[in-house]
Amino acid sequence: MFDALQENLGAAFKTLRGQGKLTEGNMRDGLKLVEKALLEADVSYEVVRTFMKRVGEQALGEKVLGSLRPNEQVIGIVYQELVNLMGPVDHSLHLKGKGDVTVLMMCGLQGSGKTTTCGKLGKMLKANGRRPLLVAADLQRPAAIDQLHVLGEQLDIPVFSDRTTQDPVKVTANAVERAKKLEADVVILDTAGRLHIDSELMDQLKRIDQRCHPDQIYLVVDGMTGQDAVNSAKAFNEALELDGVIMTKLDGDARGGAAISVKEVTGVPLKFMGTGEHLENLEPFHPERMAGRILGQGDMMSLVEKAQQEFDQDEAKRLEEQLAKGEFTLDDFLKQMQQIKRLGPMKKVLGMIPGMGSMLGDLDELDAEGDLRRLQGIIHSMTLNERRKPKTIDQSRRRRIAAGAGVEPSAVNDLVKQFDTIAPIMTAMAGKGMGDRMKMMKQVQSEMAGNPAGMLSKKKQSTGKRLSTKDKAQALKERQKRLKQLKKQKKK
Ligand SMILES: Nc1nc2c(ncn2[C@@H]2O[C@H](COP(=O)(O)OP(=O)(O)OP(=O)(O)O)[C@@H](O)[C@H]2O)c(=O)[nH]1
Image (cartoon, rainbow, N blue to C red):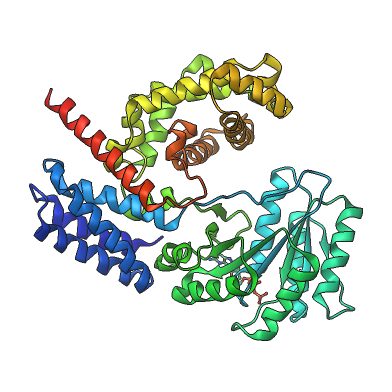
């Protein structure tokens, strides 16, 4: 994925590697190459311009820090700016509680991968214990209805269609009724596509939106089409107010520009990416991971291998037995975190995550220690039953636990959410062979790469809001202060 961009950026950073000290001259040469690499990857011109301005300002600002290696400093800045450009992303589908029907409306141009993505989402939701209903609201192309029925059969997910009408609004309204009868809780609408954006299509989609009020509207775009994908996202967003973009075909020769530009150009986050034709090839889009991948830093596998080697064998056996019974509690979660901590100093462990290596100045060891302690404090403030069944933690329990741990109630909520993500993966691990286990470890590890299991301070997590210039200046100041402290410690 994005091989050429990775290579070109690598070459740009190489020019800075030999430099003893950052000067305006060598910095400008290096940054010119970064700019060229982004433009060649089809990142929109406007986006490149703003991006380079931000990177340039910071890179030259860092000059005062002198003795740090220039290429590391610049990679760190580029990494952070790429993350800012592509994020933050809220991956939640904002599903209502079970029993209520959530309507997800999928739209996009013909051939973008919309129908396939409906199937992929259905599969993902089903795996998470939801009861999806696929709805053929693409009445333009009869074959699209058949395609959805085939997918439904493959996935064992019900499909609603009505070949007697040409009105997708009617189909959608009836589908919600059918969902209630079938006790389905998520309706996934596969709407019609067109080869190009036209007013008839937009009107039709707007009518569905106005009459049926879908809870979330996602646009499916083909990542291979580069700037066209970004432009169509802009047009759809103007007509429909999208909640997110799903970019498909990022497994192919996509140059990456569309994935990098779309959030900055449209303000709509890229939530998921399609990484293949198979129905399991849908992944949440993590700006941090993508930036790490683009910069080609670090060594994920070595972290996974290390985790395997140093895994406490007795604990592993105990956990294995528990997982086989389908049990994974918050106490186990805490133990897992402590084990990861034992792999080595947190900075070293995080340094193995792509892109993090050059950001170590940002990762204060004390923060990681403090956050692990905070995690422990929260879990220890829970009753045994709450640790076993975090779902029982309601608002008043949350308040009590938070008071006991000296944190905000939202911190308890965040922890339970992280646990909800990791627990199904852990229980699915039970009884698997080594190969599958490695794959799952990678999945758990990659869940942590975006937010290493909540160990990074809350202030460093994506909040769903863009940092204001003032916040950025403050963050930069703090970063510079930490770098100075680090330098002082090194000297000692
Ligand atoms: N490589 C790859 N192919 C994909 C991906 N998603 C979809 N496809 C393929 O793209 C082609 C078009 O997908 P569809 O799901 O039929 O597209 P659509 O947008 O529903 O098209 P219409 O129904 O004609 O509007 C199919 O051959 C899919 O297998 C992906 O993430 N990667």
